[in-house]
Length: 340
Picture 1 (spheres, one colour):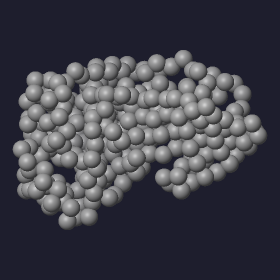
Picture 2: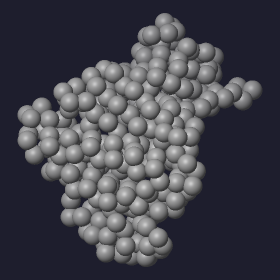
Picture 3: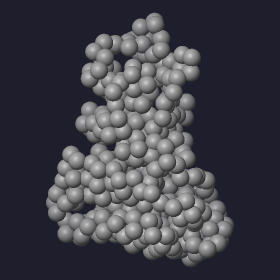
Picture 4: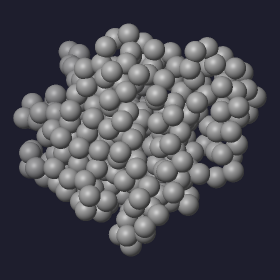
């Protein structure tokens, strides 16, 4: 028997960082994001030999452990172990024996929420196998708790909720409360947005936790410049939501540009000369705006290219050695199934 699950990665259009404590606790955060047709996958194969086998083919990692109620968090397979430890602690109360294989369509540190999405996919696979009573909010909150509390990984909340719910969402964060508002956007608007948005992988990854810690510290110190920039990021999320719902799609470019300019003010480590050069080339080629997806520092760049400017942008950025990823927006969140 095979138990499989997948969860979609996301691109963040506006408000990124306002879901991170202490900003969201003090002021409330809002984010507009969308799930795309790139995924994190998890497969569980039950065993009866008292072993736990963990494998990540995309990272060329493989290890077998003796089954136990708690696997040591030691920097190796921590996301996988963290989910297992919590499932046993909260639900099963006894060791399990299985093989868990995971794979993600994007590299770690790429800015598409890959780590958090993978945690959601793993939780979803265990939910399917063990028939756990988890709705979308429960699934996202459990994944968040594993990553942020059990494993002490810095970050916000949007990735887990995006992966659990799927679709285009306007999310609100205030303290421990999260409200996911699915957006009903006309298909013609989505088609136009899909056509005009380019997803460009810079070829570099980054440690988002370090960037997020820096942002959080600025919020904690109440750095005036950083806080004002965060307020504007939140404001742009409302404006972008309105633009999408009313079909003013070309406004997305201007709002992405304003968002990127202010996001860089929240932390000095979000951009660098390489990223700035990529951005300038894309703008000169016809893009009206863009931003790094996720915390910053590297990973995927998202550009808005109106009319037919996408082709010139592709031509110019291709000279830098990065790669473009085709995608579609997807309305489906985390899914699971069993193969007998």
